[in-house]
Image 1 (cartoon, rainbow, N blue to C red):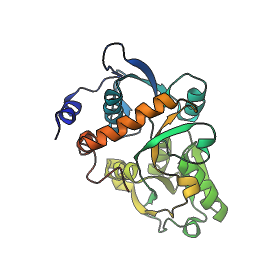
Image 2: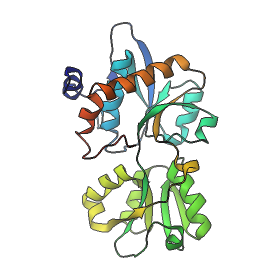
Image 3: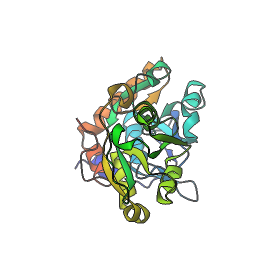
Image 4: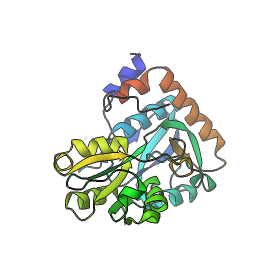
Length: 259
């Protein structure tokens, strides 16, 4: 493990990431709601999670002074294009639709989606099997786009939620039959007390590149080539020097970057 990797792991998690004196300050948009294990604020507003650690390491490598700026998920792209934030680090998948309004860095992780449902119902992750079921998805997510395109057309009822937590809570309470989310969030849900009691993985969805995109990237304003270049170089650096692998092992027992 490199000394940089050890330093990243040892560093306490704070809202601001201070780089060298005089570094460029960058407002980093995070979804305001908790999304463990990627990002969650405590009662004092201090953020922690894998994506917080990744952002800290990336900004240190890019010599940027990065400040977490919470934004409601359904308004995070307008906040970027309107200049309220400078980039998005929020598990945002690179899709053709989003690339019409914003730019992206290189991929920094991938997580294919699956369906989690209640144990008392027997179905799988295919549109045919989900016909007649009620599926909860988060507004503005790739899961929202996928469920409306594939499951609603096949006869499922798709219920939209402002946050994934709200969808999960309705699943636990039996108000919906299933939810779609990525494999990392699936692991977190099923390892929770409520999730393990009520639910199980029904299967991974069939890949649709038009909806599911090319992995997760840092969202950037179109034309901000200088910042994009710094971010891409920083992602490459922390992957090469071992920092990315070291911080990821704190949260996952598999390769989050993917192929």
